[in-house]
Amino acid sequence: MKKKLLSAVLVTAMLAAMTTGCGSASGSGKASLKDGGKVLNIYCWNEEFKSRLEDHYPGYQKVDATTGKIGDVTVKFTIVPSDDNAYQNNLDSALKKQKDAKADDKIDIFLVEADYALKYVDTDYSVALAELGINDADLADQYSYTQDIVKDSNGKLKGSSWQACSAGLIYNRAIAKEILGTDDPAKVQEAVANWDKYNETATKVAGAGYVMCSVNDTYRTYSNNVSGKWVQDNKIVVDPNMKKWVDDSKKLVDAKAENTFDLWSDDWAKGKYPDGKTFCYFGPAWFFNFCLDAGEAGSIAADGGWGYCVGPQSYYWGGTWICAANNTDNKTLVKDVIKTMTTDKAVLKEIAQKDSDCVNSKSVLAELSSDSSGNLALLGGQNPYKQLADGAEKVDLSNLSKYDQACNEEFQKAMGNYFKGNCSYEEALESFYKAVQAKHASLTK
Image (cartoon, rainbow, N blue to C red; front, side):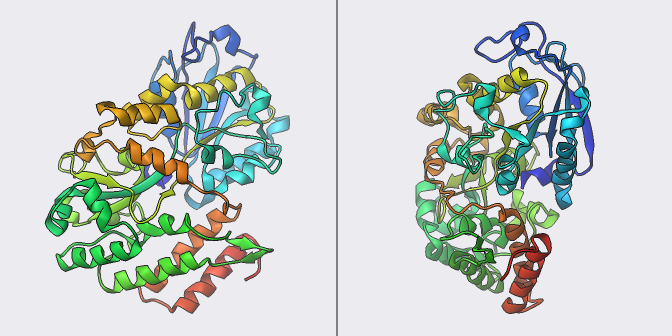
């Protein structure tokens, strides 16, 4: 995910924001934000949220690259990359010490992703937003799926996100013109409207000397459209749609229409440039900003050479949720940060326009999709927000479970060996079961 594109080493950074009169765009002053805590500790896995605060939290004053103030409160980011589960391990250790930690060391805010959100929101380590004073009316403009992800088993909302990460197919316009005779998003969509159409187009793409994408690019589209959970009655279950991903991918790899490059690898990243000969990537709006090298001369994005369409199936990928830690000594400030960054429409529109993000506000996306304010240069001036908003309405999380991270990671890893011809499907499947059981010993196959 995007987490792997940023810092690859442990970083501890200090930042801060906002002097006198600071607060949300609705005018909170520093007096109303202060509970007595001198340090606002925020735990996350990359610098994305740090940059969002720096750029969009009203009144932020940057002292240097890593420090600043919110009134007289220091904000300290502890950033630990997610590689090898390092972020969660570090967060788990700190949360276990939270109750007895010194005031300046207490976690105030921590961030989570969808794959493991339930691990944290269904515990006492997180605080319900209602307890902070953030109510249903404050959150009414958000997409429902973004709230479903961070509800505990009692239905209490334990986090909030500024993102709505519906996703689609991002295609190379030049290759589309060559292969399909057009780069019009509606016409390209017809060529990839379902998996049969997608596979037909992949054959044409391969025949012209290009590759569609990596098998790992399509994974989330299949996994978001399963008929059941990964674990049912304590048993690991491979959904028919996951088997379809395996079968479709194997055929395309054997036909050299898709490759097996790992996401974020150097070979995978070559597709961002014309010589990479890659027809498409699959991704959400954060992919635009973080993954396509739009600021690099010679990249396809820098030349406005990408287009966007929904692709074979609607799906979502990723997102970052802000959670309040239990025993925070900065409840009022935590409330203001969450409310400002995830519900303030002026702030959310800024994020969309500056960072090419798909924000968690139905009305803001409607506004962006209605005129040129939502046009993106890296998409050749195309406005993707109507499709992104429609996709966010279709996200179905009924099959979300606390085992998703382990199952998704290990299934891709195991099947990668099968795609490369290193083992049979049955051997890959057995490897998958063993890897998941190593992480969750109580599960059966």
